[in-house]
Image (cartoon, rainbow, N blue to C red; front, side, top):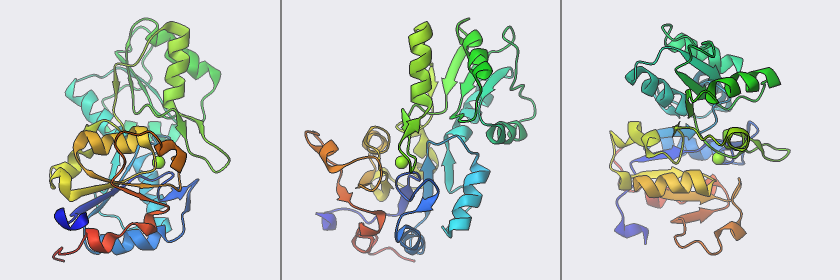
Length: 268
Ligand SMILES: [Mg+2]
C-alpha cells in the first residue's frame, strides 16, 4: 500500500497521549522522533493551552526531543493572530498565570483583564488552577453576549491518574447555565492549526501522528494529511469498531510506525 504513495516530507506529532503521558515519555518515543528528525522536519502540535509555548519548548528540550524555531504549533498563537487581525484590545483572558503572562508579553497593547462593561472578547484557555470567582468573571461577561472564543474544545485532557476536564467540559458548564456556546475554537480539528506546515508541504506529504479520534484523526481528514494512530493514549481498539473510515496506520506506540518505508527516497 505504502509504495503507491509519495514519501513523507514532514511529520507532525501530537504530544499528550502520543509522545508522553503526564510529562513522562512513552518507551522509545524520544529516540524514534530523533531518528525521524534526521530526515524530515518534525513539528509538534498540541491542543493543551494550560502551558505556554515557552514551557513546551523547555519540556521538549529537557526530554531530548529535537526542536527547530517554529516547530511548536500552539492554539494560543492562532488565537493571538485572530485577535490582532480583528484589532480587539479589551479582553478577558481565562488562563493559568504562566500562560497569561506569556500572552501579555506577546502584545503589550492588549488589556487582558477588561471590566465586565469594557470587555470586547472573552478568551478561554485550558485553565487548571482557577478559583470560582474567575469562573464567575467569565459568566458575567458572556451572559451579556460579549464575544467568546476558546483556544480548543477537547472535553478531557489525559492524565496518568485518569482524564481530567478540559475546555470542552467548561463549555458544557456554560451552555448548561446560560444556553451559550463560543463563537470560535482554534485548536484541532481546526485545519488552520496546520497552516505553518501546509505552507511548506502538500497535505499528502505530511504525516500526522495523534492518539485522539475527534481531534487528531479529524484534523488529518479535514486537511488531507496522512495519519497514524498510536493506541497508547486515549483511543483503544474497541473505539475503532464501526468507524466508516479507519486511520491509515494503527500502531501500539509511536516507535512501531514504519518510518523507514514512509520516509524512503528522501534526500537528506
Ligand atoms: Mg493527545
